[in-house]
Length: 151
Image (tube, rainbow, N blue to C red; front, side):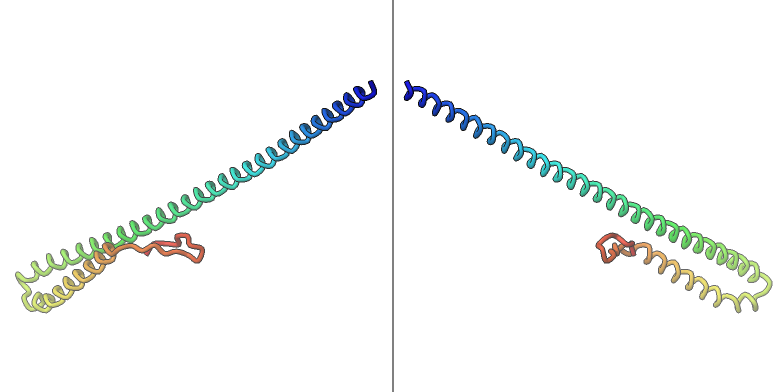
């Protein structure tokens, strides 16, 4: 009888030890799962922050490019207006020369070389402006690697 009680007591202790071991294993599994969840949340947060940073950088680059395009458009309009004004002046001078040739040949002949020089100068300016507008653009980057401007 005592032997049977001892066996039962030993069996009960074994069951208690198994239950404690099982509880400890479950507790460790829960702690490990919490660590995995924390690491996953951190990774998701870092990924989100990186995405937000890239979107902000992209928006900044787009704004810089738009500003550069606006500056180039304004420069183009300025050059165009200047060329149109110079053309009007030259056309007026040519008209004046045509009127002078009828009655004042001495003054007309004296101004004709000047008109050729003016036309040559205007052609050179137009060619320089056209060349400036047609040359390839280059992106200039700052020390941080971001777009600083377009040349």
